[in-house]
Image 1 (cartoon, helix red, strand yellow):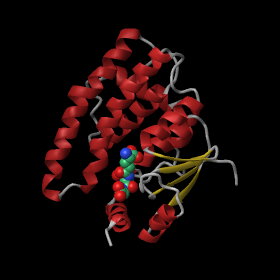
Image 2 (cartoon, protein in one colour; image 1 turned 30 degrees about the vertical axis):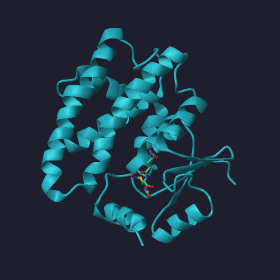
Image 3 (cartoon, helix red, strand yellow; image 1 turned 90 degrees about the vertical axis):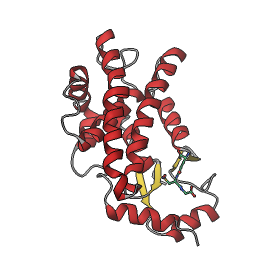
Length: 223
Ligand code: GSN
């Protein structure tokens, strides 16, 4: 055992990418095992690794962690990215849930039928620019601080940054009306751990392609 957290998921973003981001932001090295076929998935279930027969799975500290939000919560707590007190934590959780909702829409996008894709993308951009980004823009403007909550780097910052990059991949000028978010993005991208994760060759995954979608469908195909 190397002592590093071991992440088991597909070789793609999906629900694991926010976990990768949070570990990387905390400066924690991790190992990965990639699901490529159904047999590997069934073996994990048979060997008792998957509490609800689902991935993501993160093995660390003697635990077999599943459920994305439980994993993220554990990491945020362990690496002091969950605020200085319960009130900061509640604020961070609200911001995090917002970005998770937004990223959840993007997560499902590659699996939607081709004829619905255009409409779905328009809806994602609309939600990003009218529901989610204005909240973070306003918060940053009002308190004038570098980070979203409590003047210190938190899980909320990591996820907002991830969400911004994801939406920019779909529409590169999406921050045009959000000067605070532009400045936020520039600042966060210069934090050493984040900068490292943004470098080519890191464990950050590319946007999903057809091969990724095919692998996911193959692994979860019913017998
Ligand atoms: O957030 C979570 O980790 C869980 N509430 C959901 C996990 C989940 O749905 N995992 C999928 C693969 S990731 N993409 O959605 C999964 O393992 N599906 C197999 C199944 O039988 O549900």
